[in-house]
Image 1 (cartoon, rainbow, N blue to C red):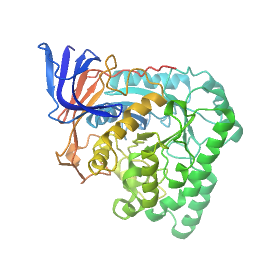
Image 2: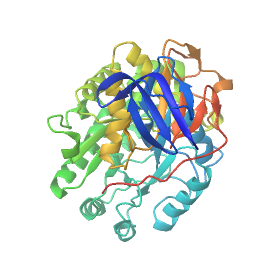
Image 3: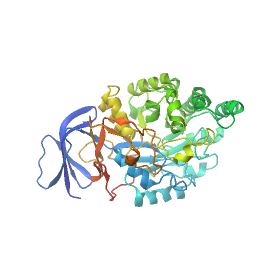
Image 4: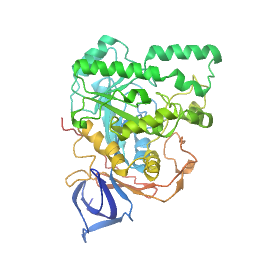
Length: 444
C-alpha cells in the first residue's frame, strides 16, 4: 500500500466534528489537518460525509467452528466491513466451545487467514475450566465471557462457588450474559403448560423477564464489588437494570460497565406481531418504556458501549415454533446505518455515537492504537454519507444466512468506504477480495 488521502469529509473524533483531511501511509494515519496536499496519494473524496473511526463491536457470534452453515469468520467479517465495523470480538459459544487455550488459538489461526476485519476472541468460562482460565495471558485475547443465563450454545455457568473463584482469579474484563436461570425456567414452564411448544412471541419478554435480568445482573455486580473483578454486563435490556450503573466517574476508572445492543435500542414488544421470531433475542426485546430508559442511560453515560450481538441463524431455523426457534439475529452490516437514523432524528449526536462505538470499546478493553482518528494510530476508518436513502433488500444482504430483521427498511445514511489498517476494504457496495486484518493487541 502507498498513500491515501481522504478529503472533503467531516471527521468525528473525541467530541469534535471538523472539516479536516486524513493522510494514510501503509496501515497508519500519518497526518490530520485542513487542506492536505500530496501528489503521490490516491485521493478519496468523502463528499461532505462523516469520517469516523472504524466501529469496534465487542460482541459478535460468527459461528466458526462448528456452526458454519449459519456464518463464518470470513462471511460475517465481510458483512461487518460493509457496515463500517473494522474490529470485532467474537464469543466462545461455538462448537467446540472456546474454553481451552488450544481452541482459542485455533480460532485466531482461522481469523488470520480469513477475516476481513481486525479480530479478537473471548475465552469462555465454564463450571469446570477454572485452572485453564487462570493460564490465559491477559494480553492474549479481549477477555473472559460468562453465560450466567443459558442461551445459544449451552455454556451456562451456575456453580456459585466457581463464579466467585473466576471473579477472583483474573485481571481481564469479565463480560457476562445476565439472566436468572431459575426464573426463566419457571416462566417457560408456565407458558408451555398453556400453549405447548408454540408459545406466542409476545410472551418472550415475559418469559425472559425484567426480573430474570435484574436478579442476575445485580447479583453479578454485587460479586464484582466483593471481589474487585472487572465486570462488563453485556446487552442490558431493561430500564430497571440501568440503575445499577454509575456515570459519576470516567470510564477509565469504572470497574463495572455496561453495554446495550442495537436491537434493544430499535425494537420494542410492539414489533413482535410483525417480526415474530426474527426479533427473538436473549435477553428479549422488551417494552417501549424499557427502550426509552436504555436510551436515557446511554446518553447520560451509565451505559458505556453500543454493540450488535450479531448472531446469525438460517431463516428456516428462525421460522420454527417458539421453543425451537433459536435466539439471535444478524446485525453487523446494518447497525451503523440504523443508528444514523437516530442521529438524523436528533436522538443521539454523532459525537456520542462515536464515543460509544469506537472510543469506549478501545478504552474499556485497552486496545492498542484503535478507536480514534489520531496520527500514529491504525487507519481504521468508515465514511458515512447522509441523506442518501437506500432500502435493505435481499440482494444487498451480505450475511451468509441471507436475511436481516431490517429487510424492507429504508435508511437515510450509507457507509460508502471502510478502511481496515489503511486498506480500502469496502468501496460503494463492493468488498475488496484482499484482506488486511490484524489480531488485536492490548495495552495492559
